[in-house]
Image (cartoon, rainbow, N blue to C red; front, side):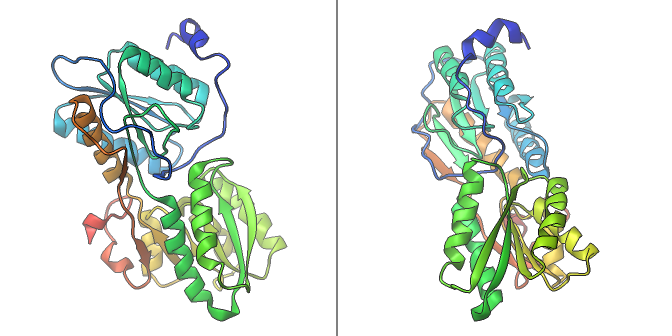
Amino acid sequence: MRINRILGIFFGTFSLLALAACSVSTSPGGSGGSGSHKRSGALTIGFSQATQQSPFYVQLRQGARKAAEKAGAKLYFADAGGDVTKQNNDIQDLITRGVDVLMVNPVDPKGVKAGLAAAKSAGVSVVTVDRPVPSGAAAHVGRDNTAMGQLVGERIAKELGPKGGKIIEIKGDAGGAVARDRSAGFHKAVAANKKIRIVSGPYCDYIRSKAVTAMQDLLQTNPDVKVVYAHNDDMALGALQVLKENGRSDVKVAGVDGLMEAVKAIDQHGPYSATALNDPISLGRTAVKTAEDVADGKKVAASIDAGTALVDRDNAHKYVGGTTFASEGAR
């Protein structure tokens, strides 16, 4: 990817944090197409994605690909593999390929500053997906992660009742806005019950295998746990696996994202209690439509919230289906 030629553009600009998974909590600072790039022929979109190391991000890419095909647009894709330096290089490569508009799902919202500056210099507008950046984007497409955490927290608080109990929290990525917001929303929801105590678990980067390892240790040191709350369903399912292996069906589990495997577990009325919808297919579709509008010079909102909803034992049957993630459209 011509790394040697372009490293100088980015040297000294990186602040590596890690992965995350979607937010509308920060305005991207734009309201329409800001680039001066002029296109001819079919629309070409560059999509720089943070990672493919979880089902959410795989499906986000698929949603964008299908939407681009339907729109008759060409989509160039680059996977940063969780490396912010590579992502900045990827963005430069996509610009060099002559894309009309960029979609960026940042590894680190602050760390892609160099890539966004390169896009601005080239007159290419940027739409951020999943995680907003402080500035430099024409629009952001994501979801309210604080609301997701709060929805799940309210359900858990109701299930625990006045007696409360210990909750283990398995976190997403260190320093990530998504992890921060999903934690804040959950904590806010359970704060009224002073008998609820939250034990802070490690950051597992939204990866199930890491959550399995973490939960094995956490269960040993917290045998009196009543609930495990994870920042996504993949990690929650990892925790559930460990609980099952240790005969702890009394411990409730909750996550976020609406992963179908989790929705089906909720519908079985077992230990899995709740999740919040975060369909990546529709997110990718909305991002492509927004990128189209930006490229065409149409006025778009600075921040577009794709919406969420609670899935619990009362309504899980309405969402069960053959997709990887549940969505409002499945009801």
